[in-house]
Length: 147
Image: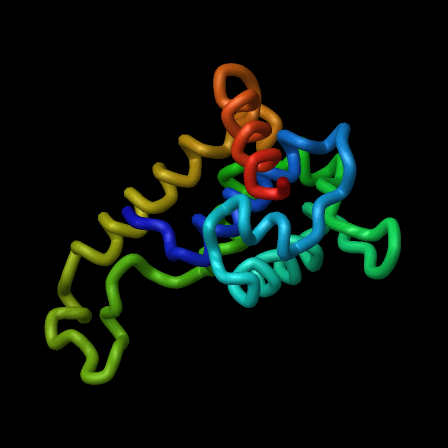
């Protein structure tokens, strides 16, 4: 299974903000530079993460992005499910629909595999992802991009 670029970016943003949670709140532009992504893409990811309660965004002087307590404790499996949506791995109902869809067992097998993938991520929290040995590297990347 492969995650969408949007989910990958949202996870990287979440990890960066968790790694620097005790420091100043970076701006969306600073986060975009640190994750090597276009500002517009980061802004969309930030909006979705804010909607999910994973981070808070404050405008103006003294503003910036901050990971929430719920965001630090969020299950990675839950977060990936929310970001990826409820779609199937394969497009059986696409246009034109697959002629095998009525008798095919692949769709159910792939759905089971997808759920096993998410279930493997369920015990991990965002905080787990940024613990040592990852944290120093995440902090270093963030600091070098904002200087």
